[in-house]
Length: 67
Image (cartoon, rainbow, N blue to C red):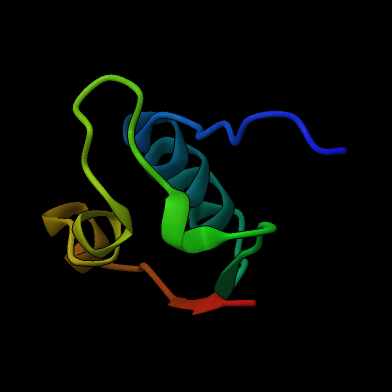
């Protein structure tokens, strides 16, 4: 039996992505048992808000994929 789903805050995800892209990574792959259940624990924002975040348009940011 699985526990309840948990989500990482969007700000933490965006900071981690920015760090990886700055290190030269070219793609971020988001994975999870059910990505459709993603909710930012601070704001309640869902996956579409993460994927359309203005921060993603920053210079040097690479591709995002869902798996």
